[in-house]
Length: 298
Image (cartoon, rainbow, N blue to C red; front, side, top):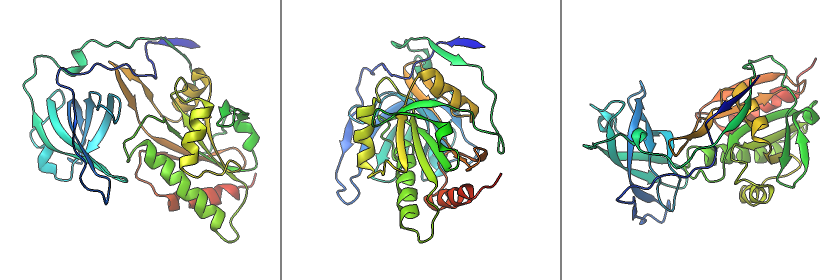
C-alpha cells in the first residue's frame, strides 16, 4: 500500500519578530554557547526534567525543531504544561546541552497555530514493525563515496545502524550518535582478538541536503574508516520504510523538524538483535552488542 503524507524533511521555518540571538560565548574550555530561545511545550516527561518543546529557529545554530530538552533543576519545569509558550536559555557545550531560565509567556497564539511555509508530499510504503529476531529486509542506499550499497551485502557481518541529519547540531542528539559510532569503531579496531566482520551505517533522513559529497565531508570529521563505516543517503521512500520498521520517526510539522532516535544492531545471520531507543547508551554497550552479533550462528 502506498500512502501520501503531507510531510517534508527539509525545513523552511518561520522566524519570530524578535530573532533569537546568541548571548554568550565565553567559556573557551568547553566552547560554551548560550542562546535565548522561544517555543511551545508539547509534553512534560514523567521524569520532571525533560520537556518536549517545539522551538523556533536558533539563528546560526539549528533549524526549528521539536525535541526533548532537559533541565538541570526540575524546579525549572514546575507548574508548566503542554500548550504553554515559554522562553528559555539553551546552553550548549562540545558534549552536552540543557536549558534553564524557563519562563511562561503570554502569547496570543501558540506556535503550532502559526502559518508554515513548508508543505510537500512524501510517498511512503506501508511496512510492518520489526522486532528482535526478525530478519532485516533488503534496503538500497548510496554511500558517501557515491557507491550503491544494500543491507543484504552485510550478511555474515554484524551491522549496526542509526539515523541522523547533518544540520542537527545539538550535541546530545545526532552528533552524539555519530560520536558514539566513532568511539565504537575505534575501540573495535584497537581491541585485541576483536571480530573483523562488523559494519556501521549512519542513515540520513535529509537526502535533499545530505548528498554523498556532504556526507563524506561530515564523515571525515569523525575520522571514519570506510571499510567499517558508511554514511548513506537514498530514496526517501526507502529511508522512510526502514525508519518506520524500527520506530524512527522524522518529518516537518508546522515548519519545524521533528525526529526521535533509534539505533539497531543486526546479527551476522541478518536477524534483528537489538533495538536501542533514544540516546541513553554508550559506545561500550554498542561494542558488546556488535561482538555478540558478529558471532551469531544459524
